[in-house]
Amino acid sequence: MKKLLFTLIIMFVSSLIKGQTISEILRTKGSDIIESKDIIVFPTHIANGEKLTVLAKGYEYFDVLIYDLHGNLIIDSKNVSTKVNLDISKFLPGMYIVKVNKDSDEFIKKIIVAK
Image (tube, rainbow, N blue to C red; front, side):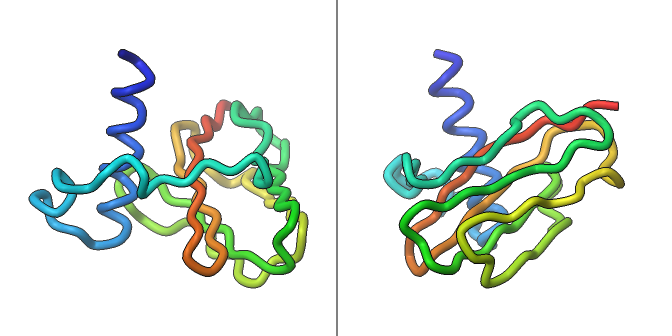
């Protein structure tokens, strides 16, 4: 049940980021969220001072976007090659959405930033 709820929340936030209306969001299928074993985001619980690492095996270049839960774009890192370490030391504590894009593939992961 928790996994389903989490998936629905991620779909909703992702759809808001894409600018979809509520009725469009309700018609969205779970397959719109692609989870890939080739994309790794870590750590998912980040303490103050740690960096967020994104690895993308098999992708020459990709984009990393980080949103707060209000849909505000916080970081927009374009054309990253294989690995990126992102400084999130200025983030307020809370939950954020990491979105990795490569062509039409999309991977979404939540992270939690602590004090």
